[in-house]
Image 1 (tube, helix red, strand yellow):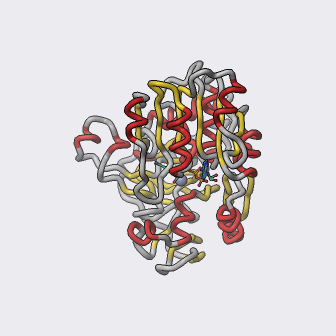
Image 2: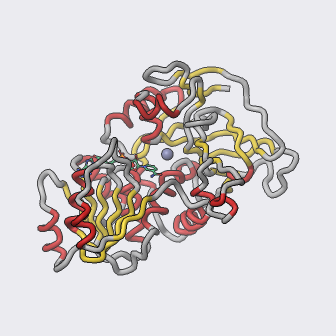
Length: 341
Ligand code: NAD
Ligand code: ZN
């Protein structure tokens, strides 16, 4: 089969022909139809410090996918050949205290598909049946291929009750933009999204009814005044990993505001803790998706009018993967989807 492999400890990925994976008794084999390129895949492509520390070479990469089950292991009972599916890319263990308490997304033994173990940038993927998420007929493969990052957005956005709240999102990457759509969908009052990249802010307005704020040109205080806010935003969703953005968020939040942090800063970042203490701000770190509550809510919202389809800005045949990765690395795109069919 074709697969995009990190073949050498160096920049880039290689298209290789490798054997179709063999499945175990609790696994399924999925024929991949569409995959999404993630920021994580760009780190792996760039072979940055994190990737060098984390990714074994050689490895089939990729973790955002939609496809169809073509084979099931002998102990798998609740899935069938021909079933369309996506799946959770975090492979959890079943021994930790967290897993045994049903908090699967907090399992410290988690391994990542396409990060630690062979991934989905391939014609076939072996996945534990436990991780499979069947796709309803009304969710197309394009959307199925971006449920992983949509799940990050859903997990973060639903960390706090957003009904009637004023929400500030920092970072209009694909995940921040989808979080804006979710905040709207669940009934937030004012939703603003910041970035320093005008293309990203323009895209945000095509996906969600959101106030774009270019922080290079505009002061958030003016945006708050225009909204008629006297105190500040109630909820912050940090989706840039940028230190300045987090600072601005803390400044722009009301007393008792709450922040969910998804963005990953490149290193240790200085934080004005006294500001956080005196504003009595609650901060929650968010990792991955809740397994499988996030998937349940996300699919239900998609079936009830949540529309994030415009966040996909580019589609390429997988043979043109270099173009796909270059588009993503350019920083002006939304999600880039590769077609394996
Ligand atoms: P992305 O890199 O595409 O988007 C980040 C955006 O932040 C970019 O558009 C960038 O221009 C913007 N930005 C940079 N400086 C800014 C500033 N000062 N103010 C406002 N915006 C600024 O990333 P993404 O794929 O949308 O993911 C969002 C974040 O979530 C990333 O940091 C990513 O690493 C992280 N992430 C975390 C998890 C997790 O499990 N915690 C999972 C997936 C992604
Ligand atoms: Zn991803």
